[in-house]
Amino acid sequence: MRVRVREETLLEPILSASPGTGGDLSFMRRKAALASAMFLAHQEVGVFVLGRSTAVQELVMLISSGDDIGTAAAAETLCLAASNEQGRALLAPVIESGTLDALLDSPNARARSAAASAIAKLGVASKALDTNSSDTDRLLNTAMLLLKGAEDVEQQEGKKLDAAAAAEDQANSARVTTERAVEVIAALITKSAVKDEIAHGSGRCTQALPRLCAACKDGRSAVAYGLAHIFASLTVTNKDVQRRQLAEKEMDITPEQLEELQRITKQKNDDDEEEDTPQRVAFRTQKIVQNDGIRALVRLADGASESTQLQVAMALRQIAVEVPVRGSMVQHGAFRVCSDLASSPKASVKCVREAAWCLGKILVTTNPNVLTEAQRLDAIPPLMRLLKDHHADELMHFEALLGLTNLASVDDATKNRITSEKGGVRALEYLQFSDHELVRRAATECMTNLLPHPKVVEHLRGESKRLSPDPIERTPMGAPCALCTS
Image 1 (cartoon, rainbow, N blue to C red):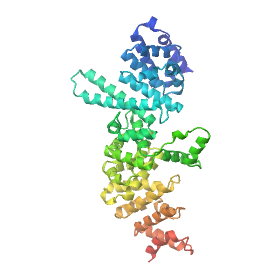
Image 2 (image 1 turned 60 degrees about the vertical axis):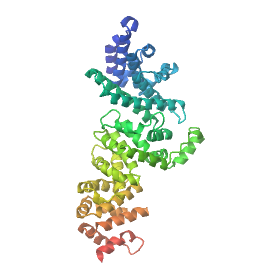
Image 3 (image 1 turned 90 degrees about the vertical axis):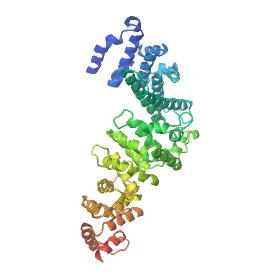
Image 4 (image 1 turned 60 degrees about the horizontal axis):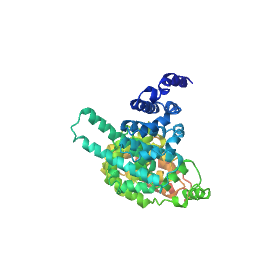
């Protein structure tokens, strides 16, 4: 209530003024800039400002004036309003008049990028952007042109001998244009056709993926999450995403059954079926690696927020599915980043799990002797925590066990680190009795490789006295115990 009183007290004199009584075009520009600033500072206040009786109409008038600065300011306000549920409700007059669609063809790059971002946000919110939609095609075309134009501006920046202020303004324009292009692509990236076009290029932009990789500066940038989300989407099929979401919600239903249910309830049409196959994901992953995408993700992990960290960890884990690229992941710093994320107290539980799983995948086929001693030892605690994670699935446990099995074969230092983990040997023993045969085998192999470490020998000698006479029940412990008692 206090916030609302302050709004009315401080903003009412400005908002009640009109272009006719308050000034000319410059006044309308300042009013649009005020609305943008309010949305950035506090969305509720921004909605209050835009909700004034003539606010939206004034923005339309400013766009219709043809003034470049005014058009860009008004388009920016509309873009920010589209990010808010209450703000979207206020944009009906702009949508009905076709103002947003017209801005897609504007010669002003900032206005064009803001309009594309606004339309993408509105389309995602209303679930109106189909794969074959003309709106989707236009938005993607605009995003590609903006991405290309932003890079051209950056390349020309060093060639021009303008004043410092002009150069700074040009750099800011390129940054904003890139941010808007990334927003649009991130909104459309769930479409299979968009994924393939980003990865392989097309007539409208042959270098989309290299430009996205180049835009990955660090995790503190405004587009860090959007870029990480794009890479995470490129490296997975849509069915795998559905399967993961259903598993997280503990729903006993497959993606195929969900699609059939959606068709029956007319939530999904047969024309919406997408063929996003593992083979296409493998091709896209190769393109990402070829365009230095691993280093790009490593840069995004630096100073990233919790949500960005999760997207980076997911992208790296999904890239690690392809065996040939695992060596490149070690060389380009992805192994180190996953170790850091899996051990970070600030990372979310999902991020820690994804990063540890990525470490396990890499170690399955990577010779541990090519790693430094620090890399080997730093990878052990995250893998041991993953083995003790009851929410992790059997594939995570299996690959973590194989990774530990390889590490345990190196030297006494790795054996000491594994056995010194609290409850480490007990966790391995527990997994020897898993319901899944491959998990049982992997746990037994890991225990065998830890021999003849004194702690393991002592533990297994005690277990051999308690083994059941039934050969079926003592099978998982048979090999290690035989080595200890022979």
